[in-house]
Length: 182
Image (cartoon, rainbow, N blue to C red; front, side, top):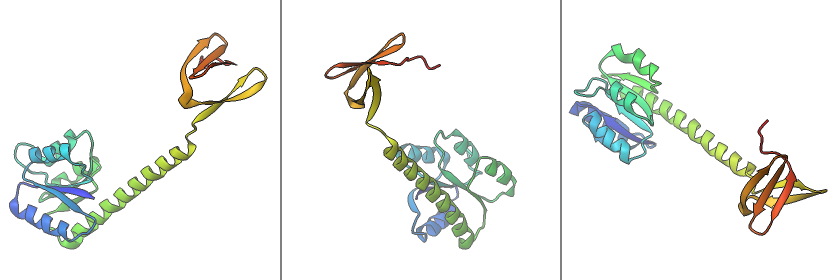
Protein backbone atom coordinates (compact mmCIF):
# COMPACT_ATOMS: atom_id res chain seq x y z
CA UNK A 1 0.00 0.00 0.00
CA UNK A 2 1.36 3.39 -0.96
CA UNK A 3 1.19 5.75 1.98
CA UNK A 4 2.23 9.22 3.07
CA UNK A 5 2.78 10.79 6.46
CA UNK A 6 1.49 14.30 7.06
CA UNK A 7 2.53 15.89 10.37
CA UNK A 8 3.99 19.28 11.29
CA UNK A 9 6.00 17.83 14.21
CA UNK A 10 9.43 16.44 13.18
CA UNK A 11 9.53 13.90 16.04
CA UNK A 12 6.10 12.56 15.14
CA UNK A 13 7.10 12.24 11.46
CA UNK A 14 10.28 10.39 12.45
CA UNK A 15 8.35 7.98 14.69
CA UNK A 16 5.73 7.31 12.02
CA UNK A 17 8.47 6.79 9.42
CA UNK A 18 10.18 4.29 11.72
CA UNK A 19 6.92 2.42 12.39
CA UNK A 20 6.03 2.39 8.70
CA UNK A 21 9.41 0.97 7.72
CA UNK A 22 8.76 -2.08 9.92
CA UNK A 23 5.57 -3.08 8.09
CA UNK A 24 6.26 -4.87 4.80
CA UNK A 25 2.98 -4.00 3.06
CA UNK A 26 3.42 -0.24 3.59
CA UNK A 27 5.43 1.68 1.01
CA UNK A 28 6.16 5.20 2.23
CA UNK A 29 6.00 7.63 -0.69
CA UNK A 30 6.51 10.93 1.14
CA UNK A 31 6.94 12.70 4.46
CA UNK A 32 4.98 15.95 4.46
CA UNK A 33 5.27 18.83 6.93
CA UNK A 34 1.86 20.27 6.07
CA UNK A 35 -1.29 19.80 4.05
CA UNK A 36 0.01 21.75 1.06
CA UNK A 37 2.98 19.40 0.61
CA UNK A 38 0.57 16.48 0.94
CA UNK A 39 -1.71 17.89 -1.78
CA UNK A 40 1.26 18.06 -4.18
CA UNK A 41 2.13 14.43 -3.51
CA UNK A 42 -1.51 13.33 -3.82
CA UNK A 43 -1.72 14.96 -7.25
CA UNK A 44 1.37 13.11 -8.51
CA UNK A 45 1.17 9.72 -6.80
CA UNK A 46 -1.51 7.07 -6.26
CA UNK A 47 -1.77 7.00 -2.49
CA UNK A 48 -3.78 4.33 -0.70
CA UNK A 49 -3.34 5.50 2.90
CA UNK A 50 -2.58 8.77 4.70
CA UNK A 51 -1.28 8.99 8.25
CA UNK A 52 -2.63 12.45 8.99
CA UNK A 53 -2.16 14.80 11.92
CA UNK A 54 -5.17 16.97 12.64
CA UNK A 55 -3.72 20.06 14.36
CA UNK A 56 -1.47 21.75 11.79
CA UNK A 57 -0.98 25.42 10.90
CA UNK A 58 -2.86 26.95 7.93
CA UNK A 59 -4.67 23.76 6.88
CA UNK A 60 -5.83 21.20 9.43
CA UNK A 61 -5.78 17.50 8.64
CA UNK A 62 -9.57 17.43 8.62
CA UNK A 63 -9.72 20.37 6.19
CA UNK A 64 -7.15 18.68 3.95
CA UNK A 65 -9.05 15.40 3.92
CA UNK A 66 -12.39 17.10 3.24
CA UNK A 67 -10.86 18.95 0.28
CA UNK A 68 -9.79 15.76 -1.52
CA UNK A 69 -11.96 14.64 -4.41
CA UNK A 70 -10.39 11.16 -4.40
CA UNK A 71 -10.12 10.05 -0.80
CA UNK A 72 -7.60 7.39 0.14
CA UNK A 73 -7.95 5.68 3.49
CA UNK A 74 -6.93 7.89 6.39
CA UNK A 75 -5.59 7.13 9.85
CA UNK A 76 -5.66 10.28 11.94
CA UNK A 77 -2.68 10.66 14.26
CA UNK A 78 -3.23 13.38 16.85
CA UNK A 79 -2.66 14.32 20.47
CA UNK A 80 -6.31 15.28 20.87
CA UNK A 81 -9.26 13.01 21.68
CA UNK A 82 -11.66 15.82 20.78
CA UNK A 83 -11.63 15.16 17.04
CA UNK A 84 -12.32 11.42 17.16
CA UNK A 85 -16.04 11.65 16.39
CA UNK A 86 -15.43 14.07 13.50
CA UNK A 87 -12.67 11.81 12.20
CA UNK A 88 -14.92 8.78 12.11
CA UNK A 89 -17.73 10.82 10.52
CA UNK A 90 -15.24 11.31 7.66
CA UNK A 91 -14.94 7.51 7.40
CA UNK A 92 -11.48 7.40 8.91
CA UNK A 93 -9.99 3.92 8.97
CA UNK A 94 -8.61 4.53 12.45
CA UNK A 95 -7.74 7.25 14.98
CA UNK A 96 -4.45 7.10 16.87
CA UNK A 97 -3.97 9.31 19.92
CA UNK A 98 -0.34 10.36 20.51
CA UNK A 99 1.71 8.94 22.07
CA UNK A 100 0.79 5.53 20.68
CA UNK A 101 2.73 2.28 20.70
CA UNK A 102 3.98 0.31 17.72
CA UNK A 103 1.43 -2.41 18.55
CA UNK A 104 -1.42 0.11 18.30
CA UNK A 105 0.04 1.48 15.05
CA UNK A 106 0.32 -2.05 13.66
CA UNK A 107 -3.32 -2.76 14.54
CA UNK A 108 -4.41 0.36 12.61
CA UNK A 109 -2.18 -0.53 9.64
CA UNK A 110 -3.55 -4.09 9.55
CA UNK A 111 -7.09 -2.72 9.58
CA UNK A 112 -6.24 -0.48 6.61
CA UNK A 113 -4.64 -3.39 4.78
CA UNK A 114 -7.76 -5.56 5.25
CA UNK A 115 -9.95 -2.80 3.80
CA UNK A 116 -7.49 -2.25 0.95
CA UNK A 117 -7.39 -5.98 0.17
CA UNK A 118 -11.20 -6.37 0.27
CA UNK A 119 -11.72 -3.31 -1.98
CA UNK A 120 -9.11 -4.46 -4.51
CA UNK A 121 -10.42 -8.03 -4.55
CA UNK A 122 -13.95 -6.76 -5.23
CA UNK A 123 -12.70 -4.51 -8.01
CA UNK A 124 -10.69 -7.31 -9.64
CA UNK A 125 -13.54 -9.80 -9.49
CA UNK A 126 -16.01 -7.23 -10.88
CA UNK A 127 -13.66 -6.53 -13.79
CA UNK A 128 -13.29 -10.27 -14.40
CA UNK A 129 -17.06 -10.73 -14.34
CA UNK A 130 -17.55 -7.83 -16.76
CA UNK A 131 -14.95 -9.32 -19.10
CA UNK A 132 -16.68 -12.70 -18.99
CA UNK A 133 -20.10 -11.17 -19.64
CA UNK A 134 -18.98 -8.82 -22.42
CA UNK A 135 -20.38 -9.85 -25.76
CA UNK A 136 -18.80 -8.91 -29.06
CA UNK A 137 -21.98 -9.56 -31.04
CA UNK A 138 -25.74 -9.43 -30.92
CA UNK A 139 -28.45 -11.52 -32.56
CA UNK A 140 -31.25 -9.85 -34.47
CA UNK A 141 -34.33 -11.23 -36.23
CA UNK A 142 -34.13 -10.41 -39.94
CA UNK A 143 -37.15 -11.72 -41.84
CA UNK A 144 -37.55 -15.36 -40.84
CA UNK A 145 -33.93 -15.94 -39.84
CA UNK A 146 -31.74 -14.94 -36.90
CA UNK A 147 -28.59 -13.08 -37.86
CA UNK A 148 -25.46 -12.56 -35.80
CA UNK A 149 -24.08 -8.99 -36.06
CA UNK A 150 -20.58 -8.21 -34.76
CA UNK A 151 -20.71 -5.08 -32.65
CA UNK A 152 -17.35 -3.89 -33.98
CA UNK A 153 -18.79 -3.99 -37.53
CA UNK A 154 -21.70 -1.63 -36.74
CA UNK A 155 -21.22 1.80 -38.34
CA UNK A 156 -24.48 3.35 -37.16
CA UNK A 157 -28.12 2.55 -36.42
CA UNK A 158 -31.16 4.28 -37.92
CA UNK A 159 -34.61 4.18 -36.35
CA UNK A 160 -37.55 3.83 -38.80
CA UNK A 161 -40.77 3.91 -36.74
CA UNK A 162 -41.23 0.17 -35.92
CA UNK A 163 -38.00 -0.95 -37.59
CA UNK A 164 -34.28 -0.50 -37.00
CA UNK A 165 -31.76 -0.37 -39.82
CA UNK A 166 -28.29 -1.48 -38.67
CA UNK A 167 -25.53 -0.39 -41.03
CA UNK A 168 -22.36 -2.49 -40.89
CA UNK A 169 -19.12 -2.25 -42.85
CA UNK A 170 -20.46 -4.49 -45.62
CA UNK A 171 -24.27 -4.07 -45.71
CA UNK A 172 -27.32 -3.16 -43.64
CA UNK A 173 -29.78 -5.28 -41.64
CA UNK A 174 -33.46 -4.45 -41.20
CA UNK A 175 -35.23 -5.78 -38.12
CA UNK A 176 -38.68 -5.31 -36.58
CA UNK A 177 -37.68 -3.41 -33.46
CA UNK A 178 -37.99 0.13 -32.14
CA UNK A 179 -35.50 2.52 -30.56
CA UNK A 180 -38.27 3.74 -28.28
CA UNK A 181 -37.35 2.71 -24.69
CA UNK A 182 -40.99 2.09 -23.68
